Amino acid sequence: MESAPESGFPWPEGYRAAVAVTFDMDAESVMLAADPTLADRPSLMSHQRYGPVTGVPRLLRILADRDVRATFFIPGHSAERYPDAVAAILAAGHEVAHHGYLHENLVGASEADERRYLELGLKALDKVAGARPAGYRAPWWETTPRTLELLAEYGFAYDSSLFDRDIPYRIVTPTYSLVEIPVSWALDDWEKYAFWPGVTGSGVIEPPSAVLANWWEEVQAHEAEGGCCVLTMHPFLSGRPARARALDALLDRILERPGLWVATMGEIAGRLVM
Ligand SMILES: [Zn+2]
Image 1 (cartoon, protein in one colour):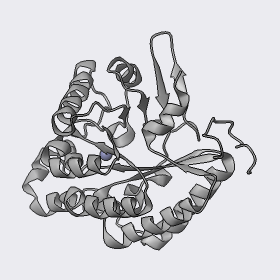
Image 2 (image 1 turned 90 degrees about the horizontal axis):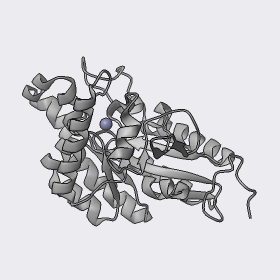
Image 3 (image 1 turned 180 degrees about the horizontal axis):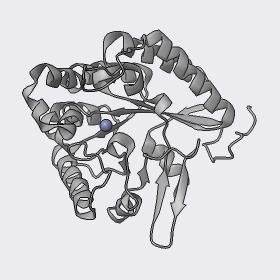
Image 4 (image 1 turned 60 degrees about the horizontal axis):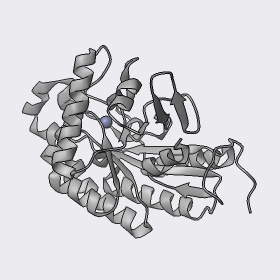
C-alpha cells in the first residue's frame, strides 16, 4: 500500500494521483474561428480534417486496446460536420464535452455572445450526440470574468480552463458552485507538434520520442505530488502514426503504475460532488 498523496485530494481508495486522457476534436473550427477566409485553403482545411477522419479512428483503437476511457471536447461545428466520429467516440464509451461552437476565443466577448456560443454548442451536441455535456473547456483556454458563473447557470458540473493548481477543486461563491480541473500548456500537444506556415506553430516540430519522455516526467511528478495530470491532445496532431505510437507507449507506462487512476474528466469532477 502506497502512502497517502501529498495533495490530500480524495482520490479513490488505493490511488494517489490521476491521469486524464483528453482530446480537443477541433478539426477546421479552430482555424475558421481565427479567420473565416481560411475555408478557401483546402490544404490547410485537410490538415485539420485529418483529426476526425484519420486520427480519431486510430486513437479509439489505442484506447480500446488499453481499456482507457477518455474525454473528447468537441466544438459544436465540428460535431455537426463529423457526426460519425462523434458516434464512434460515444459508442466506445468515452465522454463528450463542450468546447464552444466555432471554437470562439472569449477574450473581449460580450455576455450575449458568450451565451450564444454556449447555447449553439449545447444544441449541436444534443442534436449529434443526444447528450448534455457535464464538462466545458474554453477554446484557447481563454475565459471571461463571467464564464464560470454562466457554466454553472447552464448546468455544467465542471470547467477545465484554469491553471492555478495541480489538483481539481470546487469553486464556491454566493451565486454559484462549479468544479475546476486545471490544465497546463506543458501537457498540450499543440505546443509540441502544431505547425502550419504563417498560421500556427514555431516551426519546430518535436519528435514523438521527446514528447513521450517529457510527458512521462510530468506524469511521474504528478504521481509523486498526488496531482491530476491532464493530457490535452488534438486528433489532427496526436492522431498521426508515430505520435499515436508514443501515446500508446505512454499509456502502457501509466497503466503499469498501480497508484495512478486513469479516469474521465467527469469521473474526476465526481470526486468533488457536494
Ligand atoms: Zn480547441
